[in-house]
Image 1 (cartoon, rainbow, N blue to C red):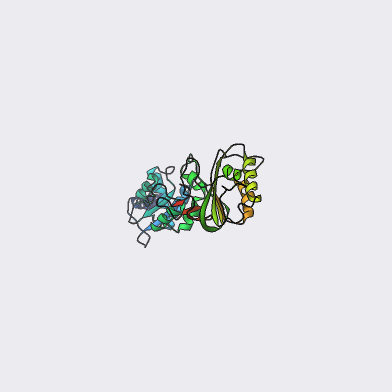
Image 2 (cartoon, one colour):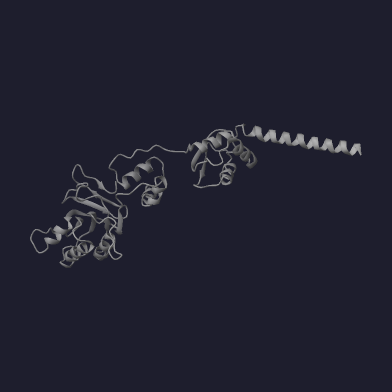
Length: 307
């Protein structure tokens, strides 16, 4: 009986020692620099609201942390389970699991410094981003249209200018136009410009409501004044922001009236009363898909788009 007890005690001691050695080994691994990836650098993307387990799986699968057990002990020792932040992280040298967790808890995400000079359009900013290696310019333009991406970074951000492609396409011609109410009033007089071959730009301010815009556009179209325009650039219609009348918005009215012209139509440009001035009678290119109106003459002119 004593022999059995001695053997049991010996086995228990052996198990205790083995557990201690294993625990010590894992503990030391939390303080041992590790690099399990072969490339010069390794990027790890942590999505918003990722669980601690999902973050660990990403770090282990990319070779940043040795194994899941080491990761779990490091999380326990660091107390950072609830403080790990989402983002893209860059690793380029051996790091201990505790250092990795500290980096993620600080939110030390990978970033590239890019400066966008004031007044640049989305298309110009896209070209700058592409030049800095941030992906194709077209992808930047598409991302800029997704306001949810901005709100994810700043929930209080409010957009002031948002171009809307009412009818896609690209056109070139002389830039002519102005205040919609004035142009409608000039129909039948010798002072209404000849819009044949022109890029028509329109702006106005609210006097009555959406019915006013609809009537004035209909008046110009039925009078034949817009029959040969090559494109339409719509600027600011002050006072119409957020206005909805019987389910119709300003964009709906513009689309309903101008789509029948069969030419590119771009809405939401920052031109009009109190906004960026544009020269009249000079060559211009309208790109409804890219959201730009580019004035190719006049020394101080350039692409007009959302700031």
